[in-house]
Image (cartoon, rainbow, N blue to C red; front, side, top):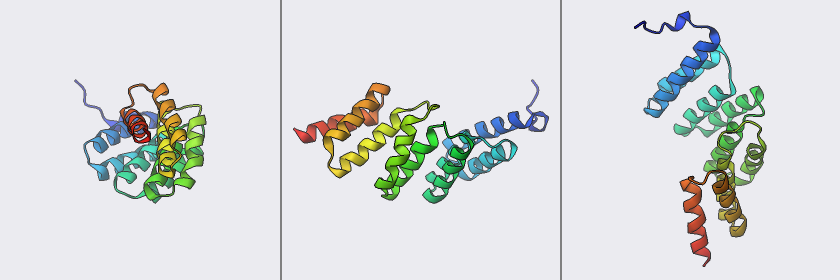
Length: 166
């Protein structure tokens, strides 16, 4: 069996290989190496996915400012990709900037290309719940569950809040 020599690949193939390596490294908790591979992927062929995942890696290190900047780069490349909008919203929630997060979550909900459209509904539900807008929060949790019935975080939040209201 022949070993993969990354130098034999096209720039697009190299970018994909680095992106896959980065994701595996990130999942293994090797964040510095993951960041290096995300950056290598971007240097070959900048993609919205690579910038979004690079931002995600920076968020694991608690650097929400840099994570948000990377997601904005992703949006510049592909404004139809939903992940970076939701991720910015989630990072802003983490920072306590909930009002600032809402427009990004709404943009994520409208995104044309988004594999996990239930995430922004759950995140908006979290904001609404914190504000005391419980019925609106329940609505968002319910939409998240309609989009992804197995989404445990939304299910737990929905029933916890419903129980608190009774």
